[in-house]
Amino acid sequence: ERRARIAAWQGPGRTADGVAVSLLANVKDGASARAAAAGDAQGVGLFRTELLFLSTPTEPSVADQAAEYGKVCEAFPRGKVVLRTLDAGSDKPVPFATMADEENPALGVRGIRLAVDNPALITHQLDAAQRAAAANPECDLWVMAPMIATVAEARDFASQVRARGLKAGIMIEVPSTVLLIDAFLQEVDFASIGTNDLTQYTMAADRLSPQLAGLTTPWQPAVLRLIAQAGAGGQRASKPVGVCGEAAADPLLACVLHGMGITSLSMAPSSIPAVGAQLAHVTDAQCKDAAASVLTARDDQEARAIARDLLT
Ligand code: PEP
Ligand code: MG
Image 1 (tube, rainbow, N blue to C red):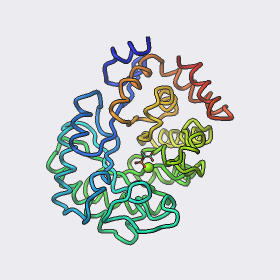
Image 2 (image 1 turned 120 degrees about the vertical axis):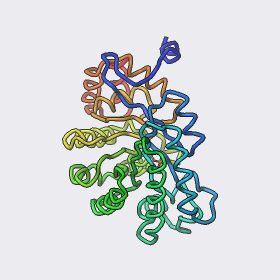
Image 3 (image 1 turned 90 degrees about the horizontal axis):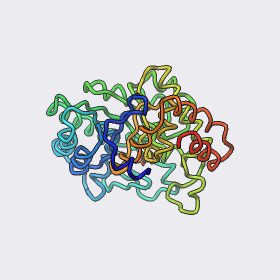
């Protein structure tokens, strides 16, 4: 029965009572963006630019970067595209951008922290994004930074992005950003929760370790509470707060996220039909009820069971 619902589902995303839920794709290049556009994705919620450059020895020119970013805009000529600046370092080494030999790379110079020693990497990316946007005037290009931890980082990044006429956002991956969510949202136009890293840094558990999979599930109640706080912050500020980590691809959790006030869900394109079908099966009120109830759970299994009871 569930399979039949998934096969029969058609976008755009909405709950059973017709409340819209924006379902977006995580992509890595023009080809994956075109594949996402041929499916049910309404836009791109996470363009992981570092994946273009995993084997690129030297920094590509601004023109070359603009051409690559433009391909993703072309795949969604009138859609939203959220480009993330380089998240090099840790699990995604980029030859021209990654620090050699750190003792704790997940806690080291990764994401926006690269800009401290090498600000040109970011300014070149932003210049390229500006060119790609100019070449695709109807594409709604937003730009966000990964691994933001301080308000000053957000302020500095946003001023650089806005100077190029683009919407500026941050990823919420470090618990400090949730604890100060109102201050962060004053600085930017939007935020997107990276639940993979937010879970890793909340639970102090390596996202790459199979032994720690019980800790690195976003169903951990502490993680759910942080997501709920970020969603509530977005509602207070009337600014979009989406989710672009693996959590968005879990159909039951997607309903919970919607109930927490999360404004878009971005995932691997292949996950969109299952998420869309689950959302279409429940009402907006059921999602809100599940969102409140999972916060009473004491562990991940209890949280999952509560959601299953209320949403299936
Ligand atoms: C995340 O951390 O959840 C995220 C979307 O970013 P990445 O998986 O690329 O680190
Ligand atoms: Mg991340």
